[in-house]
Length: 205
Image (cartoon, rainbow, N blue to C red):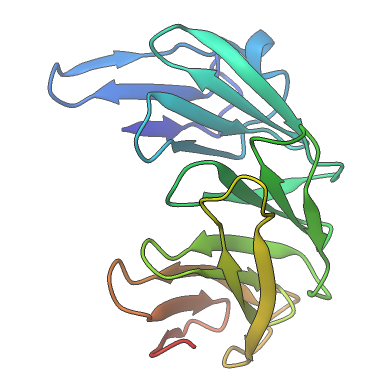
């Protein structure tokens, strides 16, 4: 379990990793290591690898070896969110400057593709655990759903195709959709917005 603190009083770093079985807590990342405000942290779905997103970069650490494996450069001014593909070799970051950056970890430390479908800040991105689906939510009040297939053949690039635009939330004071999350087994999508509503979209696509 990992937690991120927003307070600036913590000089050793914002990220804490908690071992639930051992009932121990570690603070492995100092402020000097992260070099910026931490926006999001995620674990690799199957390996002891830890993803840490700052405002402009994504740092990838090997927890057992305690080394940084890679530093991804988004080219964005401010990262807002991050999601890891269920296989673990591709990640997507959303940004407040309206972009969604897709990284193939087997290729470059720069985005494989940058998606610009939203008119305002992207608040959340999420992969479906079982279906080849990607969702992005933004302050323009829309949620974009993509067919996002990653192939076993390393010679084939990921396939990203827009499928549907969901418009169910009203924009309130410049804020739109704050969060989106897929159901763990069904092709369903949950969304939550600044209008105080939570919606469930079924059978997508």
